[in-house]
Image (cartoon, rainbow, N blue to C red; front, side, top):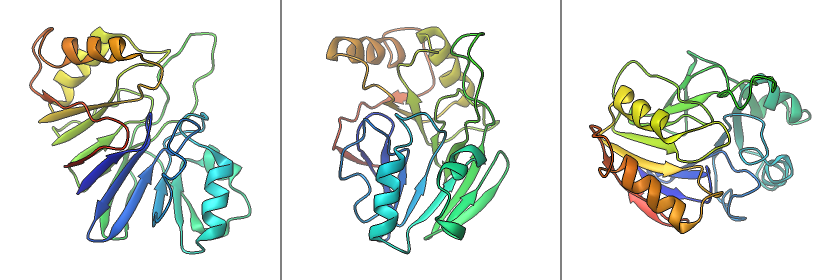
Length: 212
């Protein structure tokens, strides 16, 4: 699979001519959905889900398929059976990709802020995008897309999450709120300069592509 970072938490995954796009939100590159066959959305926050962009892409391509939790699907009314509701434990095939849904709730931002549904996606058993949660998988994966910075996170939790999931490689995402200095700090602390983890750390810039 070829993985291209399209800004913040938006990832474009390509395989054998098919394209999945995960979490095209308000901070994503404007061209993130061009040529997409399917879109996977983890939750309804605007940095992960830009309704206007999704609707425009769906209008331009009647074959575009959408997968999301029930709350997001409700915001996409009018698109009919092109929208499939998925939740924790569901599995599905789309355009040659095998996908598992993992997780139920967004991470706690503050006890006074109600938690919403968040569903992560494991693609082909190898690449995991958790959205805005540190969802345990119960087994290691090849590549973990790690939310590097959020109102709900701290570095110690990220390190322990990497230790728990035991990926071979970590690629940071959810980092639009960080300066270069902040990204370097995360790379240093999670990528070998801090407490040891079992994973290698590979920073991928916006627009860059890697094999996964």
